Amino acid sequence: MGESFDIRKWFDKRDNLLVISGPCSVESREQLLTTAAGLSEIDRVKVLRGGIWKPRTRPDAFEGIGEIGLKWMQEAKQRYGFLTMTEVASPEHVELAMRYGIDILWIGARTAVNPFSVQELADCLRGCDIPVFVKNPIAPDLKLWLGAFERLDGAGLKYLGGIHRGFASAEESPYRNEPLWEIPIELLRLRPKTPIITDISHICGCRELLQEVAQKALDMGTIGFMIETHNNPDLALTDSKQQITPESLKNAFKNLTFRKKKVDGDAIVLQNLRKEIDDIDDEILNLIAKRMIVSEKIGDFKKQHKVTVLQMDRWKQVLEHHINKGVGLGLNDESVKEIFEIIHKDSIDRQL
Ligand code: PEP
Ligand code: MN
Image (cartoon, rainbow, N blue to C red):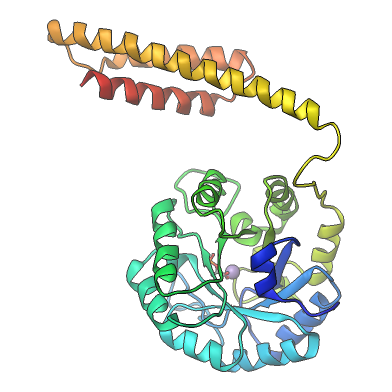
């Protein structure tokens, strides 16, 4: 590894990609140290992660190695100079993690979903200056994620970060957890000072998708990654399908394209295109406002003639027409559907 890495400076500046890697679960001393040795060959990896207590769906699954694993994390830290990071779900976990010199904590997706647990963690962390990352709650509920940050703010924690790990969804999907990129983007808009990194392992759930999702995250401007690695992924006791070897991680980095955050040349071209977009957006807003006025007139007519506001057949026809037209124009059918569902809902509200 290169020179030592100061996580507090990273929180202040966020100039370099923060790469956190290590096993889903710490399983044995040999497994952790072998994985850490592999990771020490990758300059970008500054933080070693390791799950010590695992929140499992079913009670008969491996629930983590417990306290002894913290000793091995400490050993890996001394040997390779990584910062160490683990998941905490209770005050007892926090106390033990701190006792063994863990440098960074994270609150998992299954804990972030529960305000009682988050408050308990916030209370026991009061007055500490340890950095804490909060994974997005499993449910796609931005307010719940925001609320978790607010509880930690309330306890005076200064170094807070978010981990975007995707969201559970009932829809069929190639991902284990649907990325729903708009949620971390909105979190960043509301909390511009909170850095958010991307946990591509839990989004993908399998090795095959990692490269493309990593690229997508970079293109969306991510400033860091959490990626699970294991010296022998096929034998991993948890999340075996999504873990990769440190060697594969090294290769994956070689195949990523890093874009600049800001343009330096040809900025005028971009400015003109942005102006064009702004004008089109203005036009869209004017047209929506115009549409609402017509919609209100229709609402008055329906009231006078005592007909229901929602006319299902008409709505079906309108939607079908717009989707077909949109697809003909090269637009995405789902997006057209969503846009008109929102417009229609607003129209209906105005007619009620
Ligand atoms: C993990 O990082 O191994 C983990 C349990 O993640 P999540 O809380 O995102 O499911
Ligand atoms: Mn995992």
